Amino acid sequence: MLLLLEGAAFSIALTLAAAVLGFVFALGLSGVRFAQIRYLQSVATCYVEFIRNTPLIVQLFFVAFGPPLLLGYQWPFWAHALLALILNFSAYFSEILRSGYGTVSDGQREAAAALGIGKVLTFFKIVLPQAIAKMYPSLASQFIFLFLTTGVIAEIGVNDLTQAGKFIDSRTFRTFEVFFTLTVIYIAISLCFKLLLAGLQRYFFGWQVAR
Amino acid sequence: MAGGAVKDLLVAMFGEPQGVVLFQLLFATQFTIYLSLIAFIGGGIVAACITILRILPSRPARIIAQCYIWFFQSAPLLMLLFLFGLGVPRLIGFDVNIWIAASMALTLYSSAYLAEVWRGAIQSQPVGQWEGAQALGLRFMQTLRLVILPQAFRVSLAPTVGFLVQIIKGTSLAYIIGFSDLMSIGKRWANAPVEGTEPFVIYPLMALIYFALCFPLSRLALRLEKRLGTVPKTAPVAA
Image 1 (tube, one colour):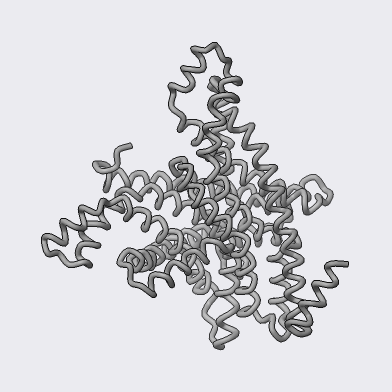
Image 2 (cartoon, each protein chain N blue to C red):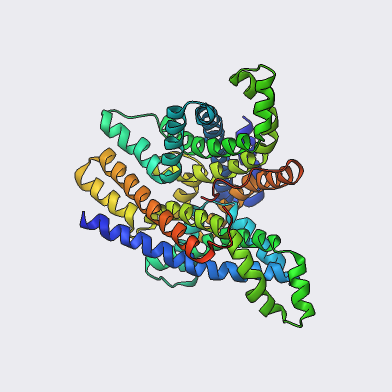
């Protein structure tokens, strides 16, 4: 029981860390595409499309076992898992953000330019806040979905919720019961996230998102 | 055999270990494709039933369908695979065929998402369409078949194709219960690397193969979306 709690706490912490860092990375990626910096833009697009069209598990194994062998360093497994999750999350978030910028009308940008506001300031003070309000529901559901996929990090030996379940299973051999409990825990946590995110939405964007 | 010829060709092109590895990866890719198709077709059939339940004018039916969708969208695919691949066999006491276990898990997974997409497409049709059909004296199923579905089909096409990508990526998890697909073969080589199958070579190679399967579908979905319009995003997409 304690093991499951620890695993759950670890899964949640790792997901949150990956989501925050991944979001920051995604801001950079989508910003590069937004600003249409020529070569960087194509690099960012290729990166996002590549990540979005390959399975997380392949990315995870590559990050966990590829570079360590090549460069001869080895972080703790959780750091490799975190890195893989950041890379994965950022691609999805950046795609949502990018389509969010499209919902902000060009007039906003032109008006800012007419007022002499710099491009960077326009992005952070005018485009981003409006886009985030529109994209918040997508970001929230994507976050929950990504949380549900994090179980695969157990495959490289990280002690997350799934790994805790596998450990208990290997002791008790009550496989069905163990994994059913695990499923229920995953559902419960994602439900909590859902409620929390909905609360945050009301708190921050309640007046902007007409739903 | 054709397989042997391809193998010889690849060995001739890339040399002894690499050609064999490449051949095995490509050979295993077919099982990835088969499993994806099974999951898509099976998921589609289940999803069709769930979608109908979801829009029936009967309240209990709607609630059952909604619970089904909610449960299987919230349950991680990995857990479904563990349950059907390892849990059920141990529960009932004999081995379930790996194809059946993997197909079951992926079918349930994809059915929930497809049902949600299709429900969105059907409900995006204006109420006037239903009322008009009713005024003409059509019954529920007739309205659905003759009026609503042909229109909803166009709307749902793009997200349905897009979801195929998620299914293909999802099949990569089936190796966990011992399904021998692209992921499984690649991992086996990476775990016991010979020259040219080190993890930093083989995983990008596998990623490329997955990419080659998924990217055309993503592009197709995007083009369909631009041409036909789409349902408002109801289901998140990733894996």
